Amino acid sequence: MIVFMYPGQGSQAPAMGSAWKDHPSWELVTEASEVAGRDVAELLLTADADSLKATHNSQMATFVLSMVVFDAVTRIGVEAAGHAGHSLGEYSALTAAGVLDYADAVRLVGERGDAMRAAADEQDGTMAAILGLDDDQVDIACARVAGDVWVANYNAPGQVVIAGAPVAVEEASAVAKELGAKRAMALPVGGAFHTPFMSPARDRLRKAIDQTDFRDADTFVVANVDGASHTSAKDWNSLLNAQLCSPVRWRQTLHALDADGAHTFVEIGPGAVLTGMVKRTLKEANRFTINTPDDLDGLLESIGSGSGTGAVHEGEHLFATERLVVSPAAGVFTPETQIENGSKIARGTVLGMVGDVPVRSAFAGEIQGFLALEGERVTARQPIAWLRQP
Image (cartoon, rainbow, N blue to C red; front, side):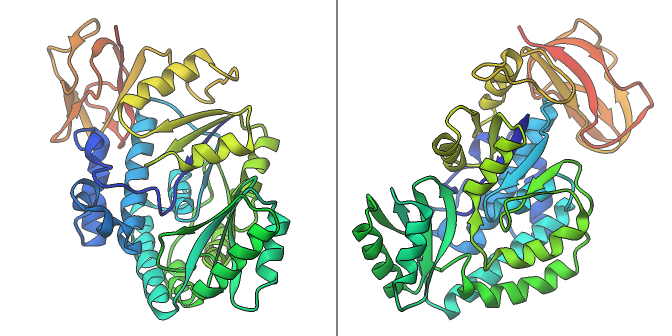
């Protein structure tokens, strides 16, 4: 069983979108910019590290790039049986699973970033990673401090994040070391996320969540709040409302996925933080990270060969050297008359038009067949043709 994972705030990096700007999936960046009323491409291409650290910037940039990568993965025919996202990444998971409309998700992520920034400005807070100590012992370290400090993330065995008032976090870190922690590392963040300090953000975000339509999931999503699988639309209003002030139960999420039969974990979005957590938590699991378009070939090869764990793609099977070309828009398909079965094409070749939008191949190879007929009305991302690479 293949599971897609989506990173949260902290995985961003300058120019993290540069590898994707010429990929057909980049169209989602333009769409997000129109919905959010800001230049998302600038965040992904030219924003510096300090700018990206700002909560409202890092969340929007990370979410949109995750959706670009997800779209690129679906274009090559790889599907997931389930989804899970870390903190902000839960919004990516819900969008990928069909629970949230993409435009609605962009608006929610924008409101979430603004609300969390405002809450952090109102209440001084920080976070620290406690390494090499059991979860229960970290809870004890927080309880032994008089000030406000709580567990914010249960990330992996021996990797827990605490958050709260700066002095209390420092004191709890010292107690954790006394209890046997190998290291207590302050994190460069501007707020105590996933703690009661985020109550003002929760209250503000609730208004946006209450106005959002949720749909039943196409595939299950494991929630941060309870570490359990959900498919019903009615669950997500309360789960998202609770998320900002509740700890992220990521270790519990991974164990739940493992118990359900997940054996291949694919990180969809910038960085490889979640892949590292899988390695610490589920040592035998097959892991893969998608950071650039070049990684797509490796993913297909891994799935096609079943390397590592005998992984089998759930959904339409593609050989490791075969690729799908999908429609970039909805409309009537008109093929290029000079392109036919057996034609050898370069990357970027126009195979036809959907309305007035060109259908360009993201890959080079030999056309094996068209999956859409001339004059057929197709939907966005519907397969148009398949090709084989040499």
